[in-house]
Image 1 (cartoon, rainbow, N blue to C red):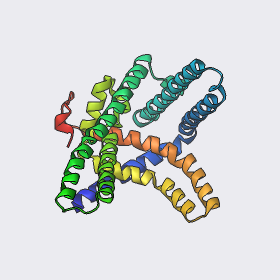
Image 2 (cartoon, rainbow, N blue to C red):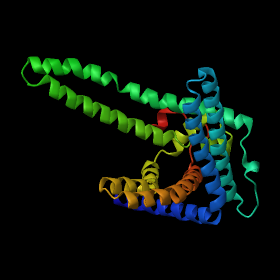
Image 3 (cartoon, rainbow, N blue to C red):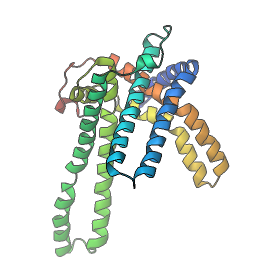
Image 4 (cartoon, rainbow, N blue to C red):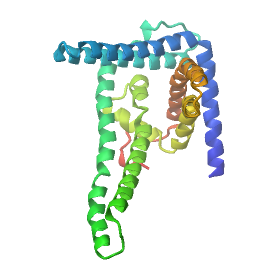
Length: 275
């Protein structure tokens, strides 16, 4: 186990180092795409606020337009980073990395599959509460449990905690699906299956990578908790301008690394890659 953690740490270090080199060399172009995503999301919120009382139909269509625009920029960012990884010496414009119509459609469909998988895992654990309830009532009747209410709340909290952990693991395992659509031209559901297959055995590495990339935000929360708002603000600004672009590159580099090491079936099934 110790050796496995050491190997995982070294792998994360390699990803961070390569990602930092790419980010430092092409910072302004990567940061521009990240900033465009931020502007799109912010503009969407403002637009929804101002026209919510004017027309619900118009508000709905504006939401659709902004979602499409946001996803297009997001996919463009991934395509641009792929170009930097594979052909760093060749010049490419941001316009040249725009995703095709088929890639956008596949991404939107895969996103629905992605949300469906998350909801399915959550709903899969809901029946546990219905099973536990009669068992708990029976234990109260026979005198093994004294307080039904407090014990029930504890069991419910534990069940919800288990559900959240399961949802997080599922999210982490299938969150690489956009890369397969952009890089491999995978079909929507195929991209979900490939993400599940390639992350098998790499969960610890991905988790460590996210912990490193999310360190800035954790420090920001800690400083807020310690009531140091000015320092927290500075950390948040630095995190926004450095960690966000670096994270996008690091996740793309991590995908390229685990997908290149993948030796499994090109059309994997789900059941054999869950654990």
